Image 1: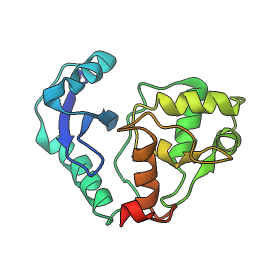
Image 2: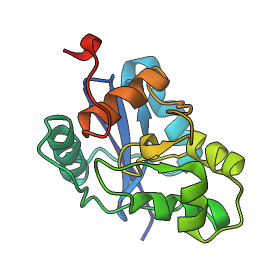
Image 3: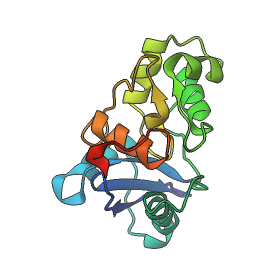
Image 4: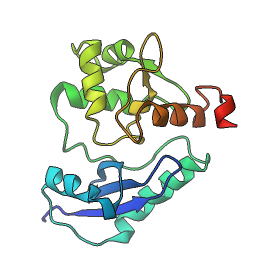
Amino acid sequence: MMTTVAFAEVPTPVGAFVLAVTETGLAACGWGSRERGSLEWLRERLGLPEVHDSDRTASVVAELNAYFAGELRVFETPVDWRLMSGSRLRVLQALHRVPYGRAVTYGELARLSGSSVPARGIGSIMGSNPIPIVVPCHRVVAGNGLGGFSGGVGVETKRWLLTHEGYLQPTLLDL
């Protein structure tokens, strides 16, 4: 059986979010919209034929909507890990187990993954995470602050997500 990919777009409080779902599960996602060409990088990266299958994407869309509504804390969405291997895969699978409302430092994630990747390397892996939010790279922080974030509009998106999950307290700007 040939593997295919179906796409969907979810409007969120931190911008439009595009999903790529194979028969196995969520293979990639990221900020952007169909109209702005955000699907192109997903299509190229996956190299799979596209199908229009809203049934395949419906559960992922529903879970993301519930997450952003504050009603979901644990994603049940199956993950298709095809874009990851080796140490990168071990690090992202360890990250996938970091619970809602918690954060780990880059060094802690290196230890949790059992890899020999140094903290700086963990930052690189976070920056290239093909499945943000579901594999929650926003939950990885620097030992002395938030650290970086390449999704959405950068560190402000990370701050919003961590505040949404209750890890950070709202500021006057959030009220």
